Amino acid sequence: MNEEIDFILDSTKESMDAAISHLEREFVKIRAGKASPVMLSSVMVDYYGSQTPLSQVANVNTPDGRTITVQPWEKNMLQEIEKAIMNANLGFNPMNNGDLIIINVPPLTEERRIQLTKQAKAEAEHAKVGIRSARQDANKEIKDLDVSEDLQKNATADIQTLTDKYVKKIDDFLVVKEAEIMKV
Image: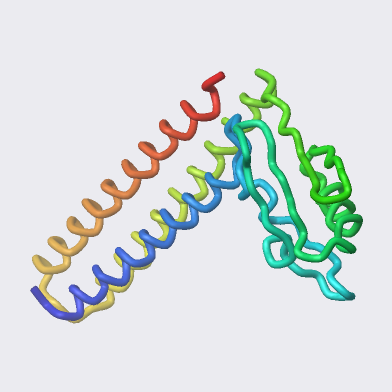
């Protein structure tokens, strides 16, 4: 096959891989029952005047499936971290015991599970849009190439096969995430 077409196929595959990676990162942020340090990844702490990610000023651990502990590297940061967690509006109520901050993660209600499932579906749909956009761009590039019609048709078919494969991957991820969310 033509090396321009190979290049287009490779760059399309990279774009589709990026959409899948983004989806995986978004799915990690969607809470599914058990506590995880990632739940606090969006928390920014006022560290001596500059906004700093929580992970850079404290150790974040999960001693069990329902608890997150935050142990600051400097004790005088306890109040700042507690305030930052509350301001992040994650629905958590941090408790400060003087050494570390303990967050009890409440079990998900049925209503909240349904809400999170909808959020997961929306993220999956967003990833599919990214995949389709990559397909559209690739088809446009192939159409602009100065190659035979047969080569164009074959390349377009290859791109559609790639698209179908990635859309199936997204659907599989979604099924797993939905099962994880709905599991009591």
